[in-house]
Amino acid sequence: MADLDQTLAVTLKGYAWLPDLRRRSGTGPVRTRVLGQPAVGICGSEAARFFYEPGHLERHSALPGLVVRTLFGRGAVHTLDGAAHRHRKALFTALLLDGDGAERLAELAGQEFDVAAARWRGGPPVRLLDESAQVIAAAVARWVGVPADDRDVEVLARDCLAMVDGFATVGPRTTHALLARARQEKRLSTTIAAVRDKTVSTPAAHDRTTRADQVARSPLSIVANHRDDGELLDPRTAAVELLNIIRPAIAVAWFVAFAGHAMDMWPRHQSRLRAGDDEYARAFAHEVRRFYPFAPFLGGRATRDLFFRGEPIPAGTLVLLDVYGQNHDPALWPEPYVFDPGRFVDREIGEFDLIPQGGGDPRSGHRCPGEKVTVALLGTLAKRLADLDHYLPPQDTTIDLSRIPARPRDGITLVVPEDRPAEKAPAEKAATEAPADEATTESAPADEAATESAPAANTPGARRVKTALSASRSPASGRS
Ligand code: HEM
Image 1 (cartoon, rainbow, N blue to C red):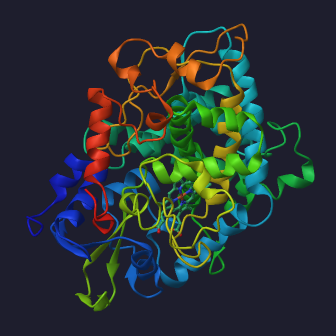
Image 2 (image 1 turned 180 degrees about the vertical axis):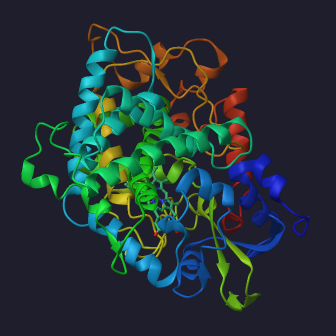
């Protein structure tokens, strides 16, 4: 089976595809075919080290054109190799890893959340996924320095969600993604050109807290003036890279929706977040990134004949690193289907262990440079959400793992009542909030043991999640 082309199976099985294939083929690398090409699937810390070893793999020929056109943009850092990648990557690491950019962006997002929460209070139900995208879009536009009124922020949030939602499918979601990208690239290239001509003043007009001397150092102006090998980027490529900061920051809304799902499933984590411990918020953010599905796997092409665990990988083979499988590998994460932020309290995380955003050194390799931003944003917004009195009305919270990117089906719809209800114990809260309908029973844990297991209550929706989660168990576990 594995030597038949598996492209269709990927689209049908989603996150479970590669873990399932690996389990059926026993331990070690699994040989397969995708997109008409020979491929090998690997998983685990040793595999991640192999995947990120300098000189082993190249990216420019490995990324499917559709992913580049929807998610990353043409000429993006993701598609570069060697010296070209190093030069471009320096732009991102300077903006996202050095200095206090991540903390500042998270602070702005916290402010925007408070403004939005005041609007939600006493109003109709809101979708956490969409609303947190708006919150982050408003914050990231201020932080980056892109001129944006309320309407621009709304469109930016929607477009960035569409680009992420449409990267792994063919159909209407792809069309939305392509249109959204075209609109934002056009708008941002005009802004880049205006910054270079000094005809736009940024960001002072939109951020009362920004002093004039900070304008020159805004991420917008840094991207606009970045040079690769002494040459300014053409405005379109500069816009692509600006979007490669803005879009994934807004994509953190997916994790915020998952955080809402986790708090609903296991309310005691909400209580702990409320207690106000920053270390716990950070651990919670790591566990959301590990437990919930986002990137299913990563791909690179072997630049020469290689060996992994004694198995030959001929030059030109696609190498697929099983991200979802590794994040649920019991060799790394005991009881991987238990949502337990405690596993990250006081724990050093190995460079190749937790890989929802890639592995290795983000400065030299392709690892995501936005992890600091992701953890800061998610920790801040999860804590804000935990502090917000709200409840989930009847809805479908199912997470279908055959859909990439997966998300709670109704985006986690919240009601924020006008009056602050009296404090309730977590168990009571779950019982009170869980209506009798099938989908929401998934979020009504009956006892402590049930609350600590994967989304596996006795509902068809939850069973579907459970089936997919079970199907994805690592062969290394010795369990099925
Ligand atoms: C929702 C949260 C995020 C997820 C799941 C995520 C995931 C990833 C993954 C899987 C990669 C590819 C790693 C590889 O190819 O080896 C990546 C790369 C990248 N990410 Fe993120 N990311 C997130 C947030 C962010 C944020 C907040 C930013 C910036 C503000 C960002 C900017 C980038 C960039 C620029 C790259 C390309 C790196 C390179 O090719 O060298 N990401 N991300």
